[in-house]
Length: 188
Image (cartoon, rainbow, N blue to C red; front, side, top):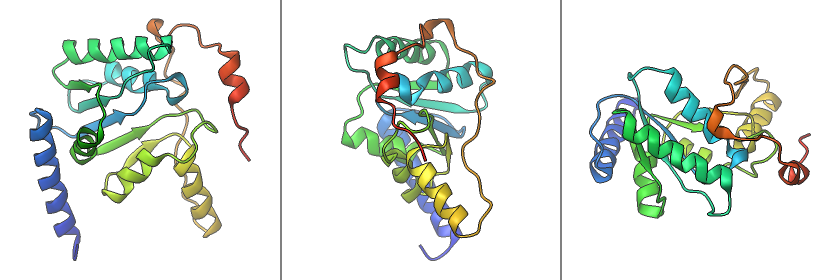
């Protein structure tokens, strides 16, 4: 790309192609949450955001849970409920390579919400970045690495933030999971 206008035009073409391939018709900004559905990735954050906001945005949700992950299976059902009850939500459970590519291209904002210290590197975050898509993210994985790099370079930039105002929805179930807590890596 030689100019910001060329990048903007290329993003618009890619988004239009992706939305068409996914069978989605919208002229609203597209917010994406797409990855494996499991507790530490906190899919309930995007579900709560959808409930809190009106229909000025289009939400594209993607991912599936391991069949033995009760929480993830409940979140799949919640994503299906949101998609069937709201005209501004679509849910794509199958994230095979071609569909995942279109989901990235369709997005205007990519969301990343894992517990800090649980995500190894955040490859979805990196995919969004190389595709020119701004992220909204918790401080984990690639976000934490980028923060440290920016701070080391003398920047006062901060990423992530607190989502403490979001409450635990009733479908989320018990949040105590000692085996998951014991697997948690400590952060420096």
